[in-house]
Length: 223
Ligand SMILES: Nc1nc2c(ncn2[C@@H]2O[C@H](COP(=O)(O)OP(=O)(O)OP(=O)(O)O)[C@@H](O)[C@H]2O)c(=O)[nH]1
Ligand SMILES: [Mg+2]
Image: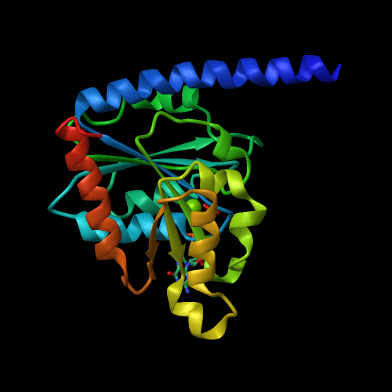
Protein backbone atom coordinates (compact mmCIF):
# COMPACT_ATOMS: atom_id res chain seq x y z
CA UNK A 1 0.00 0.00 0.00
CA UNK A 2 2.76 2.39 0.99
CA UNK A 3 4.84 1.47 -2.08
CA UNK A 4 1.83 2.15 -4.31
CA UNK A 5 1.37 5.64 -2.86
CA UNK A 6 5.01 6.52 -3.50
CA UNK A 7 4.75 5.37 -7.11
CA UNK A 8 1.71 7.57 -7.72
CA UNK A 9 3.47 10.57 -6.17
CA UNK A 10 6.50 9.94 -8.38
CA UNK A 11 4.29 9.79 -11.48
CA UNK A 12 2.64 13.05 -10.49
CA UNK A 13 5.98 14.79 -10.06
CA UNK A 14 7.30 13.30 -13.29
CA UNK A 15 4.32 14.55 -15.32
CA UNK A 16 4.59 17.93 -13.55
CA UNK A 17 8.24 18.09 -14.59
CA UNK A 18 7.34 17.50 -18.23
CA UNK A 19 4.65 20.20 -18.17
CA UNK A 20 7.07 22.58 -16.44
CA UNK A 21 9.76 21.99 -19.07
CA UNK A 22 7.30 22.92 -21.83
CA UNK A 23 6.29 26.12 -20.00
CA UNK A 24 9.94 27.10 -19.44
CA UNK A 25 10.68 26.57 -23.13
CA UNK A 26 7.70 28.68 -24.16
CA UNK A 27 8.49 31.52 -21.75
CA UNK A 28 12.16 31.57 -22.80
CA UNK A 29 11.10 31.54 -26.43
CA UNK A 30 8.99 34.62 -25.79
CA UNK A 31 11.82 36.30 -23.81
CA UNK A 32 9.74 36.34 -20.61
CA UNK A 33 11.28 35.73 -17.18
CA UNK A 34 9.06 33.44 -15.10
CA UNK A 35 9.33 34.07 -11.35
CA UNK A 36 7.71 31.77 -8.77
CA UNK A 37 7.05 33.26 -5.30
CA UNK A 38 6.85 30.87 -2.34
CA UNK A 39 6.13 31.59 1.31
CA UNK A 40 3.89 30.92 4.26
CA UNK A 41 0.46 32.56 4.15
CA UNK A 42 0.67 36.29 4.79
CA UNK A 43 4.44 36.75 4.39
CA UNK A 44 3.81 39.57 1.94
CA UNK A 45 3.88 38.02 -1.56
CA UNK A 46 1.01 40.08 -2.98
CA UNK A 47 2.17 43.27 -1.28
CA UNK A 48 5.64 42.77 -2.76
CA UNK A 49 4.11 42.30 -6.23
CA UNK A 50 2.05 45.47 -5.77
CA UNK A 51 5.20 47.38 -4.87
CA UNK A 52 7.12 45.91 -7.81
CA UNK A 53 4.23 46.91 -10.10
CA UNK A 54 4.69 50.52 -8.95
CA UNK A 55 8.47 50.27 -9.34
CA UNK A 56 8.37 48.75 -12.84
CA UNK A 57 5.56 50.94 -14.21
CA UNK A 58 6.62 52.59 -17.47
CA UNK A 59 9.91 50.63 -17.56
CA UNK A 60 9.04 46.94 -17.59
CA UNK A 61 5.78 45.08 -18.27
CA UNK A 62 4.61 42.38 -15.94
CA UNK A 63 1.72 39.96 -15.52
CA UNK A 64 0.78 37.84 -12.53
CA UNK A 65 -0.74 34.41 -12.03
CA UNK A 66 -2.20 34.14 -8.55
CA UNK A 67 -2.63 30.86 -6.71
CA UNK A 68 -4.97 30.51 -3.76
CA UNK A 69 -7.23 27.87 -2.31
CA UNK A 70 -10.26 30.18 -2.58
CA UNK A 71 -11.18 33.74 -3.64
CA UNK A 72 -10.13 36.13 -6.39
CA UNK A 73 -8.80 38.66 -3.88
CA UNK A 74 -5.11 38.66 -4.78
CA UNK A 75 -5.76 38.89 -8.53
CA UNK A 76 -8.10 41.85 -7.88
CA UNK A 77 -5.36 43.59 -5.87
CA UNK A 78 -2.89 43.15 -8.73
CA UNK A 79 -5.41 44.27 -11.39
CA UNK A 80 -6.07 47.43 -9.41
CA UNK A 81 -2.43 48.29 -10.13
CA UNK A 82 -3.15 48.10 -13.87
CA UNK A 83 -1.31 44.77 -14.20
CA UNK A 84 -2.98 41.78 -15.94
CA UNK A 85 -3.63 39.00 -13.45
CA UNK A 86 -5.25 35.57 -13.48
CA UNK A 87 -6.49 33.81 -10.38
CA UNK A 88 -6.16 30.06 -10.05
CA UNK A 89 -8.19 28.65 -7.16
CA UNK A 90 -7.11 25.16 -6.24
CA UNK A 91 -10.22 24.36 -4.17
CA UNK A 92 -8.10 22.82 -1.42
CA UNK A 93 -4.76 21.86 -2.92
CA UNK A 94 -1.86 23.49 -1.08
CA UNK A 95 0.27 24.26 -4.16
CA UNK A 96 0.10 25.15 -7.84
CA UNK A 97 1.04 22.60 -10.49
CA UNK A 98 2.59 23.24 -13.89
CA UNK A 99 -0.51 22.05 -15.79
CA UNK A 100 -2.52 24.83 -14.05
CA UNK A 101 -0.03 27.42 -15.32
CA UNK A 102 -0.21 25.84 -18.77
CA UNK A 103 -3.96 26.43 -18.87
CA UNK A 104 -3.47 30.19 -18.38
CA UNK A 105 -0.34 30.68 -20.47
CA UNK A 106 -2.17 31.19 -23.76
CA UNK A 107 -3.88 34.30 -22.32
CA UNK A 108 -0.63 35.91 -21.13
CA UNK A 109 0.32 38.80 -23.45
CA UNK A 110 3.38 38.07 -25.59
CA UNK A 111 4.96 41.48 -25.01
CA UNK A 112 5.54 41.29 -21.23
CA UNK A 113 8.94 41.09 -19.52
CA UNK A 114 8.08 39.30 -16.26
CA UNK A 115 5.50 36.62 -15.48
CA UNK A 116 5.19 36.40 -11.70
CA UNK A 117 3.48 33.36 -10.22
CA UNK A 118 2.34 33.77 -6.63
CA UNK A 119 2.04 30.27 -5.23
CA UNK A 120 -0.50 29.19 -2.63
CA UNK A 121 0.64 30.38 0.81
CA UNK A 122 2.51 27.36 2.16
CA UNK A 123 6.18 26.81 2.92
CA UNK A 124 6.11 23.05 2.30
CA UNK A 125 4.13 21.68 -0.69
CA UNK A 126 4.95 24.33 -3.36
CA UNK A 127 8.67 23.62 -3.01
CA UNK A 128 8.30 20.25 -4.77
CA UNK A 129 6.52 21.59 -7.86
CA UNK A 130 8.45 23.14 -10.71
CA UNK A 131 6.13 25.58 -12.49
CA UNK A 132 8.45 26.24 -15.43
CA UNK A 133 9.86 29.38 -13.83
CA UNK A 134 13.44 30.54 -14.34
CA UNK A 135 13.70 32.15 -10.93
CA UNK A 136 12.27 31.12 -7.58
CA UNK A 137 11.95 33.54 -4.68
CA UNK A 138 11.23 32.36 -1.15
CA UNK A 139 9.89 35.00 1.21
CA UNK A 140 10.29 34.96 5.00
CA UNK A 141 8.69 37.73 7.03
CA UNK A 142 10.07 39.02 10.30
CA UNK A 143 7.02 37.96 12.41
CA UNK A 144 7.54 34.33 11.34
CA UNK A 145 10.87 33.98 13.17
CA UNK A 146 14.45 33.67 11.99
CA UNK A 147 14.60 29.93 12.79
CA UNK A 148 12.41 28.83 9.88
CA UNK A 149 14.94 27.96 7.14
CA UNK A 150 16.28 24.90 8.99
CA UNK A 151 12.73 23.77 9.83
CA UNK A 152 11.45 24.03 6.25
CA UNK A 153 14.64 23.38 4.27
CA UNK A 154 13.17 22.32 0.91
CA UNK A 155 11.67 25.74 0.20
CA UNK A 156 15.05 27.40 0.79
CA UNK A 157 17.01 24.69 -1.04
CA UNK A 158 14.84 25.08 -4.14
CA UNK A 159 15.01 28.90 -4.21
CA UNK A 160 17.38 31.21 -6.07
CA UNK A 161 16.85 34.11 -3.70
CA UNK A 162 15.56 34.73 -0.20
CA UNK A 163 13.50 37.86 0.40
CA UNK A 164 13.28 38.86 4.06
CA UNK A 165 10.06 40.87 4.23
CA UNK A 166 8.42 43.33 6.67
CA UNK A 167 11.79 44.83 7.61
CA UNK A 168 9.93 47.83 9.05
CA UNK A 169 8.85 45.55 11.93
CA UNK A 170 12.40 44.53 12.87
CA UNK A 171 12.69 47.07 15.73
CA UNK A 172 9.77 45.34 17.47
CA UNK A 173 10.62 41.67 16.93
CA UNK A 174 13.33 39.24 18.00
CA UNK A 175 14.20 38.49 14.35
CA UNK A 176 17.86 38.50 13.33
CA UNK A 177 18.10 38.91 9.53
CA UNK A 178 21.76 37.77 9.58
CA UNK A 179 20.77 34.54 11.34
CA UNK A 180 17.94 33.84 8.90
CA UNK A 181 20.24 34.53 5.93
CA UNK A 182 23.07 32.39 7.32
CA UNK A 183 20.73 29.49 8.08
CA UNK A 184 19.23 29.64 4.58
CA UNK A 185 22.67 29.91 2.95
CA UNK A 186 23.86 26.89 4.94
CA UNK A 187 21.06 24.96 3.20
CA UNK A 188 21.61 26.61 -0.20
CA UNK A 189 25.13 28.00 -0.63
CA UNK A 190 25.16 31.13 -2.77
CA UNK A 191 21.50 31.95 -2.14
CA UNK A 192 20.96 35.66 -2.85
CA UNK A 193 19.37 37.56 0.04
CA UNK A 194 17.33 40.77 -0.01
CA UNK A 195 15.81 42.56 2.96
CA UNK A 196 12.76 44.64 2.08
CA UNK A 197 9.83 46.54 3.45
CA UNK A 198 7.26 46.46 0.68
CA UNK A 199 4.88 48.87 2.41
CA UNK A 200 7.67 51.44 2.78
CA UNK A 201 9.33 50.64 -0.54
CA UNK A 202 12.65 49.99 1.19
CA UNK A 203 15.11 47.50 -0.30
CA UNK A 204 12.98 47.20 -3.44
CA UNK A 205 15.60 48.74 -5.74
CA UNK A 206 18.06 45.94 -4.96
CA UNK A 207 15.49 43.24 -5.62
CA UNK A 208 14.21 44.95 -8.78
CA UNK A 209 17.81 45.19 -10.05
CA UNK A 210 18.30 41.48 -9.40
CA UNK A 211 15.15 40.65 -11.38
CA UNK A 212 16.17 42.90 -14.27
CA UNK A 213 19.63 41.30 -14.29
CA UNK A 214 18.05 37.84 -14.52
CA UNK A 215 15.81 39.03 -17.38
CA UNK A 216 18.83 40.39 -19.26
CA UNK A 217 20.74 37.13 -18.78
CA UNK A 218 17.73 35.16 -20.05
CA UNK A 219 17.47 37.32 -23.16
CA UNK A 220 21.18 37.15 -23.87
CA UNK A 221 20.99 33.36 -23.60
CA UNK A 222 23.21 33.25 -20.52
CA UNK A 223 20.57 32.08 -18.03
N1 LIG B 1 4.46 45.85 8.36
C1 LIG B 1 4.41 45.32 7.13
N2 LIG B 1 3.32 44.61 6.79
C2 LIG B 1 3.32 44.07 5.54
C3 LIG B 1 4.38 44.22 4.62
N3 LIG B 1 4.10 43.54 3.50
C4 LIG B 1 2.88 42.99 3.71
N4 LIG B 1 2.40 43.32 4.93
C5 LIG B 1 1.10 42.97 5.51
O1 LIG B 1 1.06 41.56 5.71
C6 LIG B 1 -0.27 41.07 5.45
C7 LIG B 1 -0.22 39.98 4.43
O2 LIG B 1 0.29 40.51 3.21
P1 LIG B 1 0.00 39.82 1.79
O3 LIG B 1 0.80 40.57 0.79
O4 LIG B 1 -1.46 39.68 1.57
O5 LIG B 1 0.63 38.39 2.04
P2 LIG B 1 0.63 37.12 1.07
O6 LIG B 1 1.92 36.40 1.26
O7 LIG B 1 0.30 37.53 -0.30
O8 LIG B 1 -0.58 36.25 1.69
P3 LIG B 1 -1.29 34.95 1.04
O9 LIG B 1 -1.55 35.23 -0.39
O10 LIG B 1 -2.55 34.81 1.83
O11 LIG B 1 -0.35 33.80 1.26
C8 LIG B 1 -1.09 42.29 5.01
O12 LIG B 1 -1.79 42.79 6.11
C9 LIG B 1 -0.03 43.26 4.54
O13 LIG B 1 -0.42 44.61 4.64
C10 LIG B 1 5.50 45.01 5.01
O14 LIG B 1 6.48 45.26 4.27
N5 LIG B 1 5.46 45.52 6.29
MG1 LIG C 1 -1.19 36.83 -1.57
